[in-house]
Image 1 (cartoon, rainbow, N blue to C red):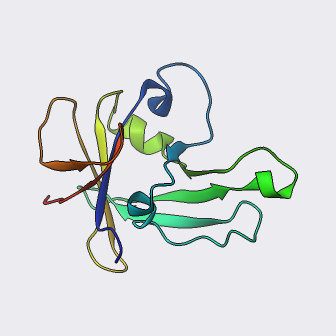
Image 2 (image 1 turned 120 degrees about the vertical axis):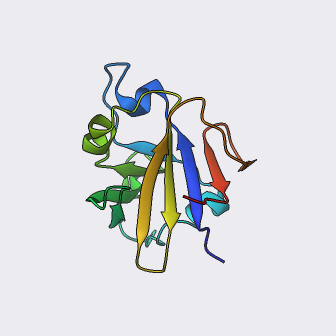
Length: 137
């Protein structure tokens, strides 16, 4: 069964507040978190798929969900990431501690929203920064 909603508590590294550069936001290999995303073909080097999401204003954002698996192709990386989020994070002035919420509204419609640090909602804790949630927004 696919996961319908997840949230990520942003770190300073995720938002660029450290001044460092990273290739997108790290997604843990937790099956419940990965269950939200489309499956990627591990036999292909660095497979990726676009994620088209609508925000609360109706604006569409396209991010990439990537499996950097070059460890299996003479490289070093073996991790999942979401890239292309910088413009979204800047548009809404998101900072470390804020939460980004991704929700599947239907098989073809994905939504993105956020909560400022300190706003509460019920969650099932799976890791320190990523969670499967029962989203109602």
